[in-house]
Image (cartoon, rainbow, N blue to C red):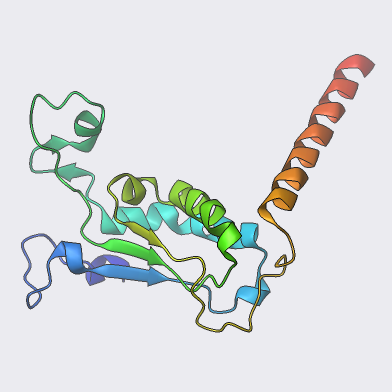
Length: 162
């Protein structure tokens, strides 16, 4: 279904060029998720979305050759047939950098080609909040660090007990 939505570069859909096509993703029910759970969902669908929206090869050759820095003076060709907009996240401004970084990791090719747009503070339903809305980005980072420290302590104990 998603592939049929994206016209090939030869197709003419009125006067809409690939740079004007966008797929919009947003939570229908943000209060049903914690932030990281929503990012995990995006991480899962990221490869499927990028496979549908971005070509693996361009007319000028393999993208791997073009993005590695060895382009033989050829201009790089944008492989994206549409952009991706992740919006209606309805979060506080202090979470903006966290959202951008987390979502860019889910869609690396779209991010690299500047075809990924993230709008973390806009909300379709402003009354809805993430389950972990009260956390700050620092609280979240501290929790991740505490988990990592605990896992490392367990590994050390196992090594010393064997």
